[in-house]
Length: 88
Image 1 (cartoon, rainbow, N blue to C red):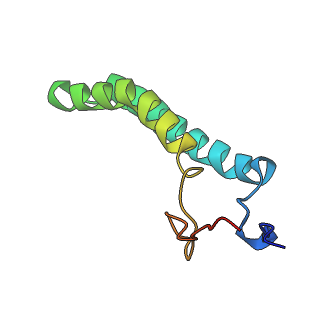
Image 2: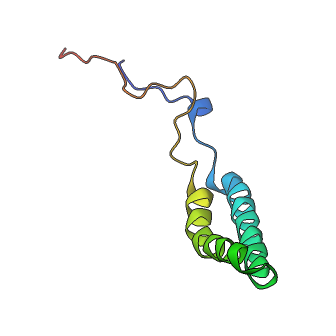
Image 3: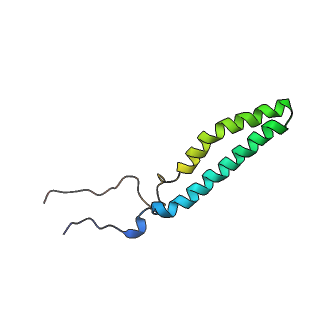
């Protein structure tokens, strides 16, 4: 009688559907990193160091960005389920 009902519309997007967008974000970040390495070689000395720092920090940022998004809470869903249970 008091069984929990699951609604399929509140389910998360499947991992196979989520993977292409995560791969695209990672690919774009790595292309920016490649541009930073090329800029390190081509730019004069003061700007060269900024490009090098960007090229060294981007792998960490790219991994964090590529993995972000699976833990988000869907709009309209409650963080705390406010259902009280009673002993029958």
